[in-house]
Length: 327
Image (cartoon, rainbow, N blue to C red; front, side):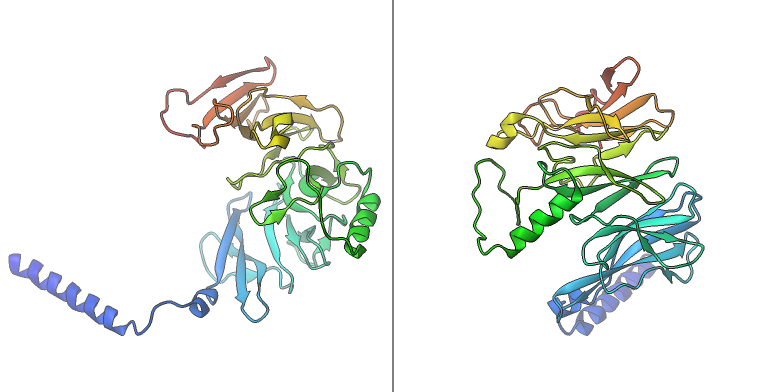
């Protein structure tokens, strides 16, 4: 037995040496960008299919091209659903599994597009001058929510378009900032605010349901969409920061709010001075779960899962006994 073990160890050592000597050069940049990047897998409502995004990098063009693919959960040959030279991403199934909403830049700016999986070409659902991203279906399949960055003091898309065109044509490119933050990592603030819009799934007017000089949702490094439809499709929960201290760079006091999907009164669910985000409704619609920190201004605080009773308007901590963050 001991001899067999020694023989196996020797064989693995020889194989490992052979593999190491066959490596004639390290992985370089040109090798790395040839690797196709597979991201954002989304299972279909019936659990039979998965759509996902494949990105291919083009060194000469200094850009990547993303397309959407479909494959069975059993494996097999995948099928390419989009082949636009512009990036296609963020595919999201309709609740009945018959349509796919996704974001594409094929029209010149990122917009939400719709693809009927029974056949036919994709068609644009949104046509906003400020673009659109982050599509989320309502549970009844009648509406979609998405995000667009707009000038908060303007009343409609036409006014936004004119202001963007004027800024582009202006020879003055300098900016004056009198509040924080004026830059997030590699992006300069341009006076616009991220707002949540709702649009009928069959097309129509997009309604800004989070008006005001606030970002909804605010920047989130966790990558989770900070807006969600209620199960009955009548309400949408979202996150924004209305704390005046934010403009001085002194806080990340995000809170959860709710509003009707047609727009209208906005009601605060949370009032804590610490960070609250990631709202999710229970399937029966009775509760709203969200993540919460306890210490204001401390971005590395422990995350707890809170459960808000919509009828009683009270929240309880589900993970108070944990000494680690929950997600």
